[in-house]
Image (cartoon, rainbow, N blue to C red; front, side, top):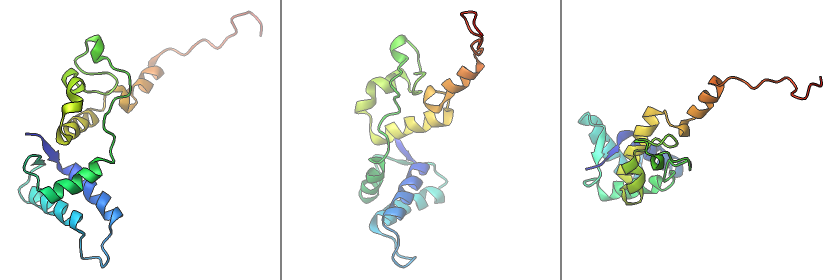
Length: 147
């Protein structure tokens, strides 16, 4: 079963901290409390992911509000999986991830996002700029003989 990574829970907690700050510095809003309980259990048990299927309903609702503020797809409209690549050079997703993306759960999508972000070698992360620097610069001399 897909899991929701602790870094996504942290991001959701920070989202809710900005959105509904504590009025007295002690009290947590219901969304923060729900997410904090899951976060605390992950830390206590030295886990990195919470199972998406058994995520508490209130925590899931709060997490989904944050999730809905994130980009749905890493696609940059340069798909090389259609050309036979196992991983897309544009976004870093596998052929299966590209094909099944609309049917994937939020946890599955975030797991793909996490993987491609950690790998960081798709064009989405600016690798094409590095390749452009490797190419020989164009000759700057005039081609028509005038100076």
